[in-house]
Length: 299
Image 1 (cartoon, helix red, strand yellow):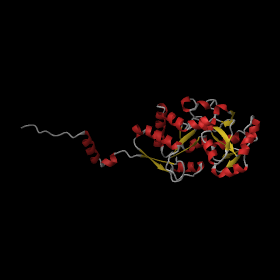
Image 2 (image 1 turned 90 degrees about the vertical axis):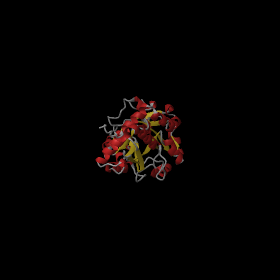
Image 3 (image 1 turned 60 degrees about the vertical axis):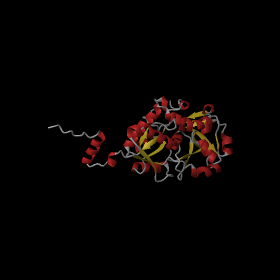
Image 4 (image 1 turned 90 degrees about the horizontal axis):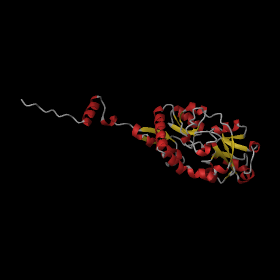
């Protein structure tokens, strides 16, 4: 009797058959996209990503081959303060946020230790009314700086850093709510990072100090909810790939480079102060993660 030929199913058919036997459908066998809830937009009503949103997109793309598809979704609210955002992060209502780091913040969320601004948010340029800036632009000594009335948002690490250093710092609720007080001279200067101060000053018709800046070591990270360790793992992997292939450097140069050039940091006198709140785990030894202009600040 001739041998009866039994067709061998293809690999795809065999996989499908195994899935059906196990109780899965083709749809459930496909990888579900990773959902990422964030608030990195130009403003509350915009669907346009800001620089931080662009960095997030880059590192999610760099991790796509290993970790699969993803979906980025807008968080429930855009105008939370940093302390409110951390509460949402801890409760799992927000997947990630971004801020300057501190010991307390690294307890509240999972830090992705790649500084989005390469350490430059630790260089703070004062903005204020035209008369205040004109009066203070020639400041030359630390004693003179100690007598300047500064303002700083109360739940930013900067407030604690500058206060600890002995500077006169007034507690502010937010930047936006303090602009009128700044214009009226309730306090003289609001020091902001060199990568953010010029656009904010222009928006509110304020001036910026041109000859000096306050400088301290710091890092500005993505922080992931402790309820989403898989997201933290993916972002760390993606950021490392973006560092290795220099795609993060390219994005940084394109988006942040012009702001650095306009600040003329190399021509300024820097008043160095300590940051006792900088965690020891900060990767200061990895020179490729920091901007060359801040190398002396990181010592």
